[in-house]
Image (tube, rainbow, N blue to C red; front, top):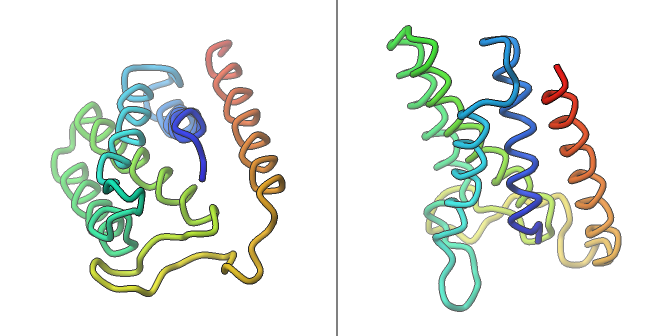
Length: 150
């Protein structure tokens, strides 16, 4: 399972890459908002540490993304659009990282079917997943450093 730091770094790097062409600045408040949303997604964990199907589902991610993008297009304001896009980036980046951790995410809420590229039988060893998460964190930090320097 990716740590919260990896979720934050990945969401911030993706939002920085989205913000740069739109406002000419990669690191801004929207980078922070995307990072916060990527943490808030994990607030739905139950006491037994299982993901709830309501938030960690492909259907919920798609619905939230469609609603936010539609509102951003209708609003027409760049700042409102970036705020809504940062919510989408934080949410989608978190869910996309969770897909790769072996447990996967639900297809629809209250359904046992999950999307996961690594099933329990073929799941890579913990060290490989941890190494890939560390590489992703390093790449995210590199992107953020480049965005700070621009």
